[in-house]
Amino acid sequence: MKLILTGGGTLGSVSPLIGVWQELKRQTEVETLFVGGKKGPEAGLIKSYGFSFKTISAGKLRRYFSLKNFSDICLFVLGFFQSVKILKEFRPEIIISAGSYVAVPLIWASCFFKTKVVIYQPDLKVGLANRLSKKLAAWIFVSFPETAKHFPPKKTAVVGTVLRQEIGQPFVQPANKRPLLLFLGGGTGSATINRLAAQALPGLKDYDIFHLTGQNKNQPAGGINYGSAEFLASGYEQKLLQADLVISRAGFSTLMELSFLAKPAVLIPLPNSPQEQNAEYFCRRQAAVCLEQKSLTVAKLIETIGSALEQSRSLSKNIHKIFSHDGAHLISQKILTLNNHESK
Image 1: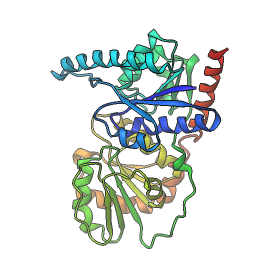
Image 2 (image 1 turned 180 degrees about the horizontal axis):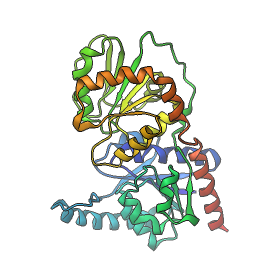
Image 3 (image 1 turned 45 degrees about the vertical axis):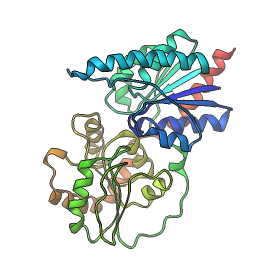
Image 4 (image 1 turned 60 degrees about the vertical axis):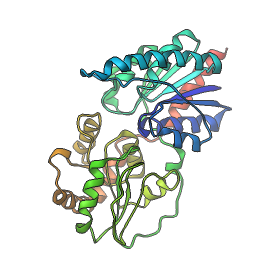
């Protein structure tokens, strides 16, 4: 099978694609090309898996007025013609997208070729990229049952979490002498969470702390109970498994990992983004504790961390049962069926 994976801008649209590719590769021979953006953080992660990697131009899809919309239209048109060139040269049978704006010109260009499109919609709120692409999709997969109503029922399936195989690997988990807090800001990092973590350190002396700051983000000068890294290409899964509590943004790739591993979490969603609906969904089901960024203080964060650790058993149980956890397998089976049908 010749396959194009497309996504980027954040790692949230990349990790599920890797999970599906890993499952497909386990069952059949796959020649894969990843098409991403020029400025996203995905290149390093993608290349660590040995993918061929190409970039295209793509303008951000905004739902509000901005002067940048005019220049981004030109970027989209350029990306469309770059996509035509890639499809003509590579000739894939399947394109799989996880909803990034980078994917839109590639999916639209697929109209000129016999290329089947598969879309994965991770967030509860449907992104504009998937709204623009859904008519061209042969199959659409969603994580939440509530999201399925936004897509044609005959070609939409609810699959739960879609994870990289590394998340499910068994690790040796040493007993923590003290509770381990893991601060995450998503694939690109969060200046707000970094600032809060740095300011909260004096009030978190009873805990061990590991902090993923994001690439090119300032790392606080911590004490003996504090460690940090900009990004972990390897070892991230081990840190996630060891954590007693995760303080994080509410990007869906991270939420899927937390759900699968049954990790208690404090969520600080990015304001005015799909993360807010993601976090609300989890917190209504008592599967995580949510904090609103605009009213959050360091004292409130420290207090909430203590409270969340006291609730850790119930949070762990509730977050794990939100989803089924075999999404990569379900998607790969549909893709194999689709590709076999087209090959006859």
